[in-house]
Image (cartoon, rainbow, N blue to C red):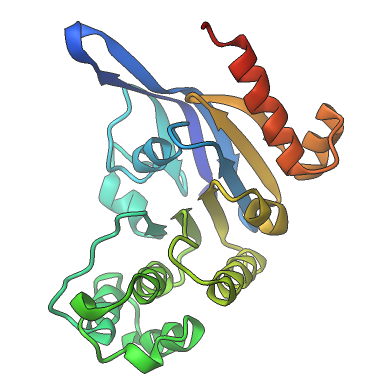
Length: 251
């Protein structure tokens, strides 16, 4: 059985006024290997979130396929998502449950054998103990994001899809998050990390895909992309690609 994330020719078009369509994601393909952090980079509106939503089965592609551990997401969504941890920018949690209760329910739904131990593990990892008895509705933005992360990690999935996971976190919490992503990778997980923060990608990503206007503008290791574009940093590569796109856009 394949142990990776596979995306082939994913395409999504949105209907527009007047019967036209806008192509949000245009035939993109990539693979995330086990033991790899794969970064998905792009400016706002590049198609990153749409790509992730198709990958985890929340949006149906107009063309192309997405497979998790070899299972087609859109033919067998429940089976495909069984070994996935997913964090979106809008992940909702039950407002009237406590943090601990949400984690316990998630662990049990995911079939974790020792749910109590798994809950305690992520409470320690994400420093939730000081507010683990609070209701979700009372949490600050940073507390809520850390809880969402714990929910995504509680069943120790072999695949992780994280959409802007450091959003709302302070500097210390962001650094701790990235450290945990690296530990998950070193433990054999395949991690797809979507971010617009280039420094995050430079720090933890083994390979990156730069997405512009729904198309693959570049893909490779940070070192490969820097060499190919004569740049000294991933940030410089990104700026160069965005400027080239803007220069080629019709006025």
